[in-house]
Each structure stands twice: as C-alpha cells, then as structure tokens.
Length: 330
Image (cartoon, rainbow, N blue to C red; front, side):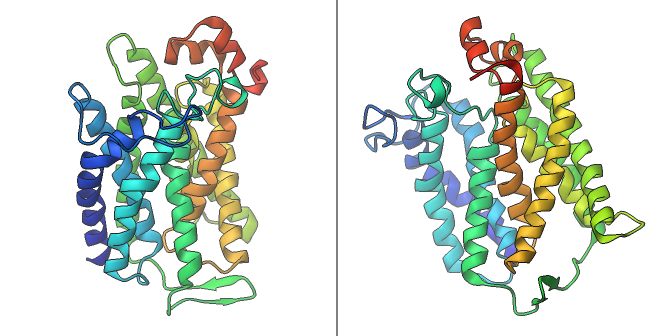
C-alpha cells in the first residue's frame, strides 16, 4: 500500500507542478544566451500546447515513480512527498529545458550545442531514465540498506520478492506501455507513421534481446544451469531503457547490439550495487541509470544518417554530421 500511495503522490503532485510551472520552465525561453538557465517568467499552459503538455506530463510522472521502488521500506512518506515536489517542479523541467527545448544548451536543433549536434535523446534514456536512476542511487546510498538486509563480503542477503507472477505481469505491462512512450515521441503520426512503427519495432528487438542475454549472463556468472526470472525480467526493462534514446535512428542490427549492450550494462550495475553494498530493492539503478547511460552512448555510435533525417526532417549535411561514429559522424 505504501508503494502504491507513493505512485499516486507522483502522479498527482506532478500534475500540479507541471501544470503551474514545470512545463513553462521546460519549454519556455532561456534566461541566458547559452540555454543553461531557463526563464521563470511564464506560468500555466499556452494555447496549442495541450497535447505536448499531456504527453510530457506522463514523462515527468514516470521519472518520479522510478525512485518509489528503490527506496521501499526506508523513507518517511512526508520526505517522499518533498522529493516528488522538487523533482516535478525544478529538477526535471530544467533537464528537459537543456535537452528537449529548442533553446537548451544540449538541444539537437542548435548549431552551437555540443559537437554542433547537441544530445540525441529521442524518448528519454537520459532525461527520464538516467535522471530517475541517479535520483534512486543518491536516495538509497544516503539512507543505507533496509533493516532486513545484510551483506557478507559483497554478497547481499535479503528477503525474496513476493510474487514472480506479479513481477512478470508488471514487466509485460511496462513493455507494452513503452510502445506509447517511444512510438508517440514521433509527435505526429501523419507523415511519420513509418518512423513511429520503426521505434516500436526497435524497442521490441532491444527489450527481447536484453532479456535473454541478461538471463544467460546471470547463469554464466553464477555457474547455474537454469535462468533466474529476476535478471531476465529486469534485463527486458534494461533493453527498453537502452533503446529509448535512439529507437528512431538505428537500424535493425544495431537494435540487437544495443539490447546485448544493455544486458552487460545492467549486469555491471548489479555488480556495482553489491560492491558498494547499496540496497536497491527493485534494481532501479542498474535498469535505469546504467542502461540509460548506455542508451545515450549507443546513440552516438549507431545513429544512421538516413534515419536521422527521416526522424527529424533535417537537411542531409546535418544528418551526416550528426550520425553515429560507425557512420562517419562527428
């Protein structure tokens, strides 16, 4: 019930913060010429922005919810309310302004941005998942492990999860929901239906590949002869996170490689948690932080100039300049 109530808090508080100030901060003007400091002059929602506001509200509430599972059994409800308020009102809108606003310092539409191309994060590997995973890491590191958890030479001893059935159902539900996040990030289906379909196909390939790879890695590392369901399920989520930044701009073969890479980054995240004895209940840090980092890196390697042009409607010279390193981009 406590975790469910936290999710309700994330959704309701993000509505208030995003509606009053957050959206205006994220997509409003910059207060400086570089796009680092957003303007705090605007409030509410401008006419013609209702669709984008609703879609982006789903993102901010998702980013906030990532932390709820990681901090289970250790945080006072009042403290969690404060966290949700600050993330929805300040942290997330500023990061969105930097990355997805046309005036942001990392915007892919600015010639003055990093490497002349900015940051390619199509649907949020960095903005949503990296930020949510980093927030989770900071929270659980500061609070320490649960009273029911102990460590012996880097080996975690913790209560088993309650239901593999519910975990599997939740994973499959999230996988289905990811089609809305990544596919709808195409913004306009009219004239962009192929781009939207491609994002969903690449999302499927990466998630499935990462799930089976993560399970196989767990078997090999632990010298087991049967796949454990937990790394397989979270491996699927890791693959979905890893493809989110680049799902519109990579070819099919790259989606398989990104799924495999997501599994390795997820497994690296598990080792990181055990090494430093960090108690992350739902493995939010390996899934969202580590795989989110990989998703941003993968965009820099595998972005196809042709698909970049199709997805964003830019000129050919910019699409080749901003293509991945494996395609001769900068």
